Length: 200
Image (cartoon, rainbow, N blue to C red; front, side, top):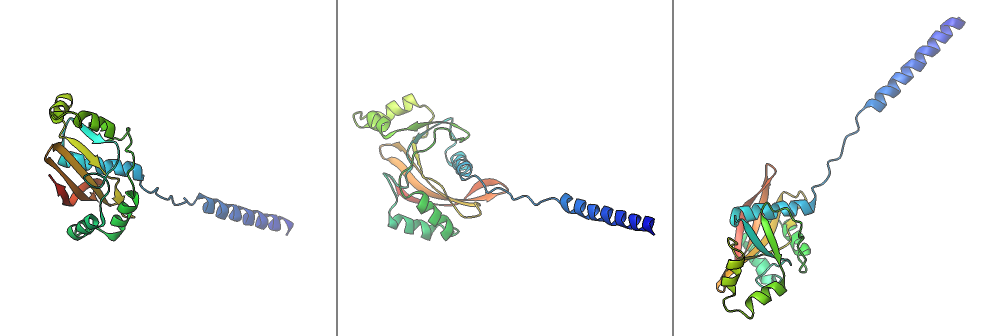
């Protein structure tokens, strides 16, 4: 009887260990990290530039803008909202929040192309006292499509829709500004819609 009791107790202990072992061996589900907004913003810039202005060298203003000179007006946002049929309210709200002011662009952005960040001082020195400023510009930066301005990028919560402004000036009376709506398709950003908000 005593021996039977020991055998029974041993079996119970082994059974408990087996249950404990199987419980601890169950894999814990991993939580996928949310996309890095900074990296996604660079990917949006790169996709947009590749589609619209493929070049060997870009000159980009070092501060963000959403209009020809500074920030977009309420009327401009109304035009964007009306023209971009697939734009979600969430994406537009995020865009407005991220572009409530002008922000410095990072000099370390990975855009897939060589670029130089141009300050307002650089621009003034080149153009304000020089009527042939564009000739000087293109002699200095051959192949550049002009001077580009970018906004910060607005995203929806899933980060599969993006809104961005891109303006470009290529001569005294040659330039335009557009808002672009992009979607992430199979991991890549592609342009869905665009609306021009100014032209010269």
